[in-house]
Image (cartoon, helix red, strand yellow):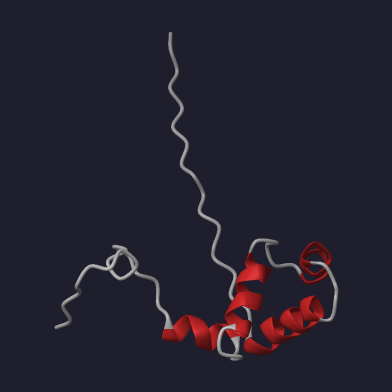
Length: 87
Protein backbone atom coordinates (compact mmCIF):
# COMPACT_ATOMS: atom_id res chain seq x y z
CA UNK A 1 0.00 0.00 0.00
CA UNK A 2 1.39 3.40 -1.03
CA UNK A 3 0.48 6.59 0.80
CA UNK A 4 0.88 9.92 -0.95
CA UNK A 5 1.20 13.00 1.15
CA UNK A 6 0.63 16.40 -0.40
CA UNK A 7 2.26 19.37 1.20
CA UNK A 8 1.70 23.00 0.44
CA UNK A 9 4.36 25.60 0.87
CA UNK A 10 3.42 28.16 3.41
CA UNK A 11 4.11 31.66 2.18
CA UNK A 12 5.76 33.93 4.70
CA UNK A 13 4.10 37.35 4.69
CA UNK A 14 6.29 40.22 3.53
CA UNK A 15 7.46 42.35 6.43
CA UNK A 16 6.74 46.06 6.05
CA UNK A 17 8.82 48.62 7.90
CA UNK A 18 7.99 52.21 8.77
CA UNK A 19 9.85 55.14 7.24
CA UNK A 20 11.40 55.97 10.61
CA UNK A 21 12.65 52.41 11.05
CA UNK A 22 14.31 52.46 7.62
CA UNK A 23 15.92 55.83 8.34
CA UNK A 24 17.31 54.49 11.61
CA UNK A 25 18.79 51.43 9.90
CA UNK A 26 20.34 53.53 7.10
CA UNK A 27 21.85 55.98 9.61
CA UNK A 28 23.41 53.14 11.59
CA UNK A 29 25.00 51.67 8.44
CA UNK A 30 26.25 55.10 7.32
CA UNK A 31 27.71 55.71 10.79
CA UNK A 32 29.98 52.70 10.39
CA UNK A 33 28.02 49.72 11.70
CA UNK A 34 28.20 46.71 9.41
CA UNK A 35 25.11 45.63 7.53
CA UNK A 36 25.22 42.27 9.31
CA UNK A 37 25.28 43.82 12.77
CA UNK A 38 22.44 46.25 11.99
CA UNK A 39 20.35 43.44 10.47
CA UNK A 40 20.92 41.24 13.51
CA UNK A 41 20.06 44.07 15.92
CA UNK A 42 17.00 45.43 14.11
CA UNK A 43 15.64 42.34 12.41
CA UNK A 44 15.34 42.92 8.64
CA UNK A 45 16.90 40.45 6.24
CA UNK A 46 20.56 41.29 5.65
CA UNK A 47 20.06 41.64 1.88
CA UNK A 48 17.44 44.36 2.42
CA UNK A 49 19.68 46.92 4.13
CA UNK A 50 22.03 47.62 1.19
CA UNK A 51 18.95 48.32 -0.94
CA UNK A 52 17.76 50.89 1.59
CA UNK A 53 21.21 52.51 1.73
CA UNK A 54 21.44 52.68 -2.08
CA UNK A 55 17.94 54.13 -2.35
CA UNK A 56 18.75 56.76 0.27
CA UNK A 57 21.96 57.69 -1.56
CA UNK A 58 20.17 58.02 -4.90
CA UNK A 59 18.79 61.50 -4.66
CA UNK A 60 19.24 61.72 -0.92
CA UNK A 61 15.68 60.74 -0.19
CA UNK A 62 14.08 58.16 2.00
CA UNK A 63 14.21 54.58 0.64
CA UNK A 64 10.43 54.24 0.61
CA UNK A 65 10.06 57.39 -1.51
CA UNK A 66 12.75 56.23 -3.93
CA UNK A 67 10.86 52.98 -4.45
CA UNK A 68 7.61 54.84 -5.19
CA UNK A 69 9.33 56.89 -7.91
CA UNK A 70 10.97 53.80 -9.40
CA UNK A 71 8.34 51.04 -9.35
CA UNK A 72 9.22 47.47 -10.24
CA UNK A 73 9.00 46.68 -13.94
CA UNK A 74 7.40 43.29 -14.21
CA UNK A 75 8.36 42.69 -17.83
CA UNK A 76 11.74 44.45 -17.79
CA UNK A 77 10.83 46.56 -20.83
CA UNK A 78 12.36 49.77 -19.50
CA UNK A 79 15.56 48.08 -18.39
CA UNK A 80 15.98 46.53 -21.82
CA UNK A 81 15.49 49.81 -23.71
CA UNK A 82 12.25 48.79 -25.41
CA UNK A 83 9.52 51.31 -26.08
CA UNK A 84 6.69 51.19 -23.58
CA UNK A 85 3.17 52.30 -24.38
CA UNK A 86 1.10 53.81 -21.60
CA UNK A 87 -2.68 53.84 -21.76
